[in-house]
Amino acid sequence: MKKNITVIEGDGIGPEIMKQTIKILNAIEKKYHHEFFYEMAMAGFIAMKKFGDPMPKKTIDSCLKSNAILFGCIGDPDGDKYLTGMRPEDGLLKIRKEMGLYCNIRPIISYPKVINKSPIKNNLLDKVNFIIYRELTGGIYFGKKGRSKNGESAYDHCLYSKKEIRRIGKLALQAANSRNKKLTVVDKANVLETSRLWREVIHEISFDYPDVILEFLYIDNAAMQIIFNPKKFDVILTDNMFGDILSDESSVIAGSLGLLPSASIGNKTPIFEPIHGSYPEAKGKNIANPLGSILSSAMMLEYFGLYEEKKIIEKAVSDSIEKNVCTQDIIEGHITPSTTDEVGSYIEKYILNQ
Ligand code: IPM
Ligand code: MN
Image 1 (tube, rainbow, N blue to C red):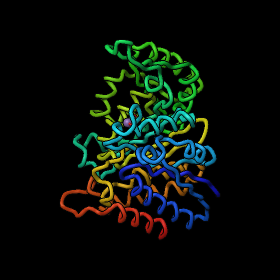
Image 2 (image 1 turned 90 degrees about the vertical axis):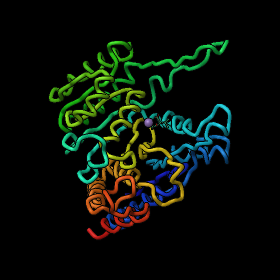
Image 3 (image 1 turned 120 degrees about the horizontal axis):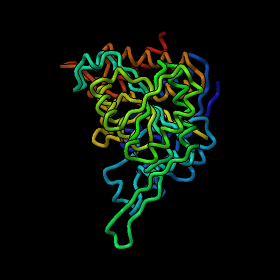
Image 4 (image 1 turned 180 degrees about the horizontal axis):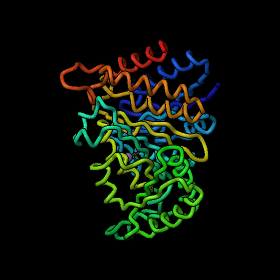
């Protein structure tokens, strides 16, 4: 298979984790005889400094021509000081919108070896495996926002159309149907009108998936249940803002934010990126966890229909954790942590030797 991939390393630890990810994809290419062509593009703080824009047109053009986007991470402590009114994060919001990526998919899995890293009781975490479907291009993130004339008040408008809810609803129902057949819709329907519309629409389209058990939970209750009963979830479907919060909360289950991958799909080129931020304190130290990014590339391969290739990366990642070849954020007890490079090389070898 031949694929064109735009690579956006971004800021902070972005270049380091992306280097490992490309290393793994090179191993996949070699083993399975694929050809991946990469085009490097800039976004985030680094692009603001160079082009005065966190998502330059050149980057968007490259993305539009590619089959997929591999994204590192963006953000910088000086991010909001550099250009008035613009932050590196705006670049990410812009590309999501430009590509029409309305569906953000965030799997949450507990790895037995990392369970001790979570502050949650071990018995609650054994075999947790759920997936968050977060709406990504609507809601309060993209509604009209502003200040009143005298600057004494501000507003953020939350808007959802039936169409926006229906298209991600279908994808989440399909996912539940192919997994453990349970869909939990998280909202605040006791207060918000948009949430009531979500309930109506999802309820309506759920009749096409008679095997899927549908459950509605208020966000406050869901936030609690994710901690004390995470095993109850299979697929969680929620809006942009609630999904942002629940996915960071869920990272506590996985033991480290550094482990979590994501895929954003929709109308144009999909993005595959780790959930974590740019971790500027670790930049250049070779200590960042590359697994979130490597697992995101596995999600990309799955999107291409390369299921065996996806599985072998996941197996290699599980094996590296099992054998304690881990960066400092997930290492156990007194074992010496591996560097970012060492983790990448271990996974590369595992794949090539299978
Ligand atoms: C995420 C991030 C972004 C979001 C930020 C950086 C704009 O937190 O991908 O979860 O809120 O969507
Ligand atoms: Mn977030």
